Image (cartoon, rainbow, N blue to C red):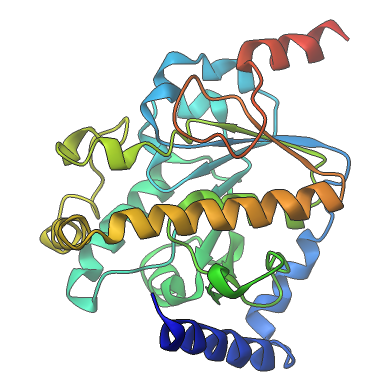
Amino acid sequence: MNAPYFIRKHAVNLGYEVQNLFPDALRNRNRKFKNLHAGERCFLLGSGHSITTQDLTKLKNEIVFTQNHFQAHKDISIIAPKYHVVIPKFHPADYDQDWIDWIQDMEAKLPSDTTFFWGTNTKELIESKTKLASRSYYVDTGFHAICLRKAKVDLTKRIMSVPTVITQCITIALYMGFSKIYLAGFDLDQICRMSNRDSIRFYGHSQITRNEAEKKIEDDSGASGFDFFNYWMIWRQLNLLKQYGDVNHQKIINVANGGLLNVFPRDDFDKVLADKINK
């Protein structure tokens, strides 16, 4: 990284700041979620291997966010997520059929009342290939965290880029006003597992991770060393989100069994759930 790199990123962010001055009809639909769950708690479920060591049936009747391919979990019908968050489409159009197959798998396996959040670049596929349009909402991404002092959390405007889905999930939960946001299964240890890409996620592969485009992205990123920069960027975003939560009295707590994510204070998954039952 050098001065021209930072100048370019500042310029990009400045452009997005200008764009944010103008209302956007699609993003404005998200206004309904502002502080919708103020004072409540939620659980965000990641795809790390630690999630298989926890009894997720205990989350029945909790407000749960799942993400990406979590419909593959054996207890998904009991978990019954209220919200499901999907990364913006990042493959070229040649691989749209993989995305269509993936999205239709979510539609078939997730509850009929789950609300979905997608990147805006997925909207055409949602509306033309599924019946999810009425319960789908969209986020615009782009801000580069390396040049930000505060997290971008307003869903009616552009938010930070999404190097991995955890930042998207936390941003949405913060916007909704949850006072406690519990993270389970966000191990953030993929960088330690890349020698065997089949073992990165608890479910192995989804329709979009087994294709050649994904393999090339992972191979190129590993060979160039960009993996390490990308991980630093994730940590940068997470620290900005933690800062936002602290200022707004919203606690983000990691209840995963292990993993590398030490940005947030840790607690025990079973204890957290037992405490509510005992009150």
